[in-house]
Image (cartoon, rainbow, N blue to C red; front, side):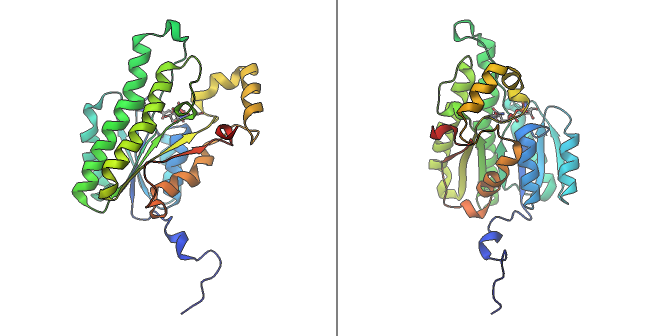
Length: 262
Ligand code: NAD
């Protein structure tokens, strides 16, 4: 038997996603774009579900040699979900991975918070996450062979936050339903896990970073001493999407520069 050379160990093969299809929601920018690129680099074809043009993402995915299917939908309305699964099947006739990344935030004092700011955030960040996972799990069960669902949580899955009541509710809920779905579907070979990004430099946090006082306070509290970037999610998302995580169920991995450790 030939000796295994450096970097040729079998465990690395467990991380490869060649021949797999990953749906990534909200991948035209930010963390979703970074995760879509990482999954493609690991070998997966990508189905992007976006409200707006994902031109840049298509370019990045195709540069890795993988295919990109561009689907448009407003995920705040769950009526589109079954149809999205149907369209995603046109790529390879199966789906292996769902990354529920699309999310929004509304900032306002709790005392003034409106029902609209509550419903808009909960509809996208929580309701749609559950029902897209349900639609994907039905497909995984129908096709056989299990599947991987990765939800995007937050530091506000663990902490209360300030001036973001519906966001905190939605992201706390994401961790709960991640556990629930894992409990019900682990026996079907479906892994449901979440990633909780820390403070990441994206559009979502542009206002925070522009506020000099808040920016300094946040940086001072992050043990790693910097904001995260989309590339920081590459390793964790590939791990959770791959065979390497087959016995990891219902867990939320923080990728936060140590924020929660303080
Ligand atoms: P972003 O604003 O750059 O990206 C959000 C994505 O969601 C975009 O692709 C946007 O088009 C999509 N989206 C918004 N509304 C949609 C809708 N109705 N239907 C479909 N897609 C829609 O933000 P980001 O920072 O990249 O956030 C990505 C995820 O990470 C979100 O769930 C966010 O809550 C979460 N998150 C971000 C941070 C951070 O510090 N940036 C931290 C923790 C968690």
